[in-house]
Length: 82
Image (cartoon, rainbow, N blue to C red; front, top):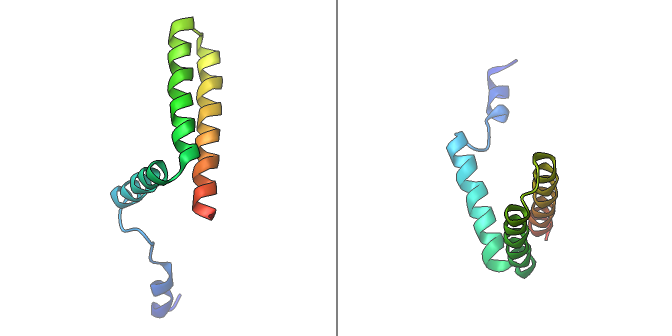
């Protein structure tokens, strides 16, 4: 590998902390600007509250967390592509 090739391998973010900061600001931006993300957040709070009230078991919590995570990830992906 030539010395000039190293210039193209530089990572976009310099540290993991910078990556987490960027992710936080992206989620915050989405929450402030996207109505559906706010709705999903409120529904998530209701679902988690219902889970505690109904005393659901570990496998049901896993299903809830998986579903909530997929919905939130899809909404964030949708916002990023818009």
